[in-house]
Picture (tube, rainbow, N blue to C red):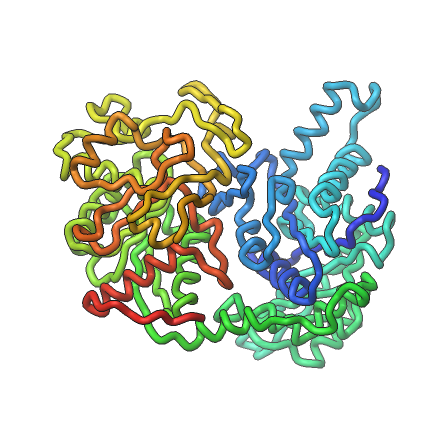
Length: 562
């Protein structure tokens, strides 16, 4: 395979011993520090599963499906990346084994391999390397996270590809960072380094020698253990980095910077001429300060379908916390199952909260609970924020309980409903101006309205007040939309359509008049995907402010900036 003329230096992040150690957060934190030193940084995730993307995977298995501007359905780690660095990512930055094999087989069918036998080496590994180059070209540093753990058969092609890249480009263009677990055995009162030693041994058996070890543990790594690990793994002592459990993930950039992890990267890649001598982490310090020393706190109920698996609503949970950070407010999240609202009633399940958010989801399970939640918030004047399915639930609530449209529903849940206020969208215009169409018979994968699209916000509405502009862009992920046939009836019942697509065909946001309800707003898009800890998002900041005002008895509160 031919390498690009001036390839981007690459940091490969792998993990060992057990999964869920936090490779994504560690990689994103390192990227944030390098960015704080003035370097142009990008990130990507290589996932070993055979699905082409996570779009049709269960949230209980995979967690949240994160959506990029270009409409790619990606791994949730891309959400961590975009929340930690300023670079906007795309489908190029999320690669699965399924994507790789899909491309290789397509080339084979087309005859690109001239009749040769197609094999993992070189054809699959070449395709992996091509994807890495496509995603990282033009940056000062690219960070590439390898999903799974070392020793998994599924991730071997990715590990083989990065091994080849190191050989082809040399150590000053490719760096291996390995994250491992250092368990603490309470009965012995000891940190155990043996799992890390074996994890590195596994890596070395396939030809990869780590340059840096990130050692995840409950407490800081003592110097004796650090030296022992260095000796047994052939890693310099200064490159054995202690990564302790933090009560706030935003502390991690400062923690890693304190051990000069960024300097190891700068030195190995010889970036002294491009990188600032020190990292400016003042924005991260401000985020930590606002989180650590709040002036207020609120409790927000998140009424969803997948609350037993918090990763299913990862961006929503983070965006709510960001909304709090921007006004020095601690946000306590109360995760509630929509079916519990159906069974036990909204009054008892939702008692004692300052605001309610109803996030997205698919299918009829729990939908009635979401409708009842909307009704409860509307009648009790509790701040309500509906996202995607949460907007659709609000529309159904108003249709049934205010407009008197008995049996109103979404055709997703009841195809025979007499009042389909929510229906399958069959045609829409993309950001590029192309018309896309679908039918009931279309494949599930890739048939949603996806990605960043503009919408026009109606002046004088709550939405316009929060955004402060006439046209905004948000990321979408859904199959069903507000049925335009019911616009007039629902508007007559008091529902305000506060934003529509630029061609005026699709309802984007609805709300209640502010003289009828202090804060009731719902949107079809997913604003949580564009929220960051350093900047927040106007809808989430506004929602948390409304919850604070509700808690304070309706008083207007002075701004508290982070």
